[in-house]
Image 1 (cartoon, rainbow, N blue to C red):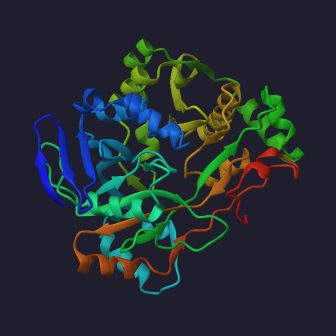
Image 2 (spheres, one colour):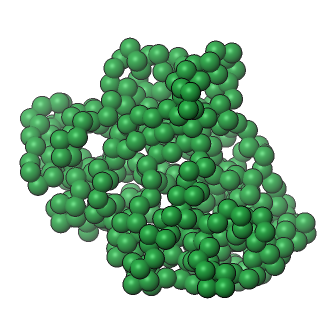
Amino acid sequence: MKNTKEKPSGRESSTLSDGTEVNWHWGVDAVKAVNWDAWDAFLTAAAQPSVFLDGRMMRALLQAPDRPVAAVQWKRDGNLIGLACIEDAKAESVNLDGHVQSERSWFSGISKLLHGKDGRFQFRVRVVGTVLGSGEHAQCWAPTISAEEARRLLTESVFEPHRLDGVRVPRVVMIKDQPILDDAPRQVQHRGWTPLEFDPEMLFHVNPAWNHFDDYMQGLKTKSRTKIKRIMTLSADFELRTLSSDELAERCDELIALYQGVYQRSGFRLGSLHAEELLTSKAEWGDDFVVTIYELEGVLKGFQCAYVGREETEAFFVGFDPILRKTHAVYQRMLVEFICLGIERRSKRVNMGRTALEIKSSVGALPRRLMCEVRFRNPLFHAVVNRYTQGYNPVAPMLRQPWKADAHALTAHSELHAL
């Protein structure tokens, strides 16, 4: 790479070996610097209606303080050929042995050494993709750019010392999230990178013929319908209310406190949600960013939020009093409400993320395996990590099968794997 230059505006430009121009737009300055109409038109032309690459989402993330986020564009002869969301973040692994299984006897020993006495392993990482979301939201390329060429352009770009406010660039890059189809083994997509697989993403396919919640219920087996009815009975005492912009501004700190209670129990953490993201998301998305609170006798007990895109509803984050998970089925009710929102807004599917797999499968979500790839700046350390990660796989999830054999979800799920 050559001709790298830094500008105080938060914009950095460089030229790759083949003459391709790469523009990095960091932070709040990028909100005005990027042509967002062209950005969104490029996504539409590429038939990639990603919620997390949507211009509204990018602007919301770029405005959040303490989030080193960049909107990256590749251009040739002034024409846009590719774009990506890139963020420098802190990753934290907690009790990795509980989330993966290995065919190699030495894996557990090395894992314990890395995690230390307190069971935590932290490192900074440059993420190509959305830190707080799962799925194909990392990058988008013009149809004229082959997959091989896109990989080369990305690999040549991401390790250059672009930074925000002088913060040291992470020594490892992670590319998120590529589907693994047809029960295939994970394999290298970007030459010189190491493929990793974690838990699958859970997808709920919405039948376009549905108009009401009862339509959804009719596609379930009798036993599963009974469970959904029990969820509705246990959670009947909640008062659900969608927050306006002003109400969200008043209560966002309370919501984040509830979210942190859930976040702290996760085994692998990559970034964290802050109050600012809620506020900027509401400002950018308006009614398409839906924040619903759960109250018992006027007391806040939980919340959930979702983005409604052109084709998908992205079930984002939740927070709740953990005591109410069993007594009032609060988390299960939230999943049902995400489904209801998807039906109401005529989405093709609801993306439910990659946690609580069994519970999500019980309401009808189906798994899609996802793979990320990592590469370290230090080639020796990369070789060690590549060797270390061979022979491990995610712990096989226990999933329910609630759908009738002729249900729309089973037909629509091209990512379906053996359950």
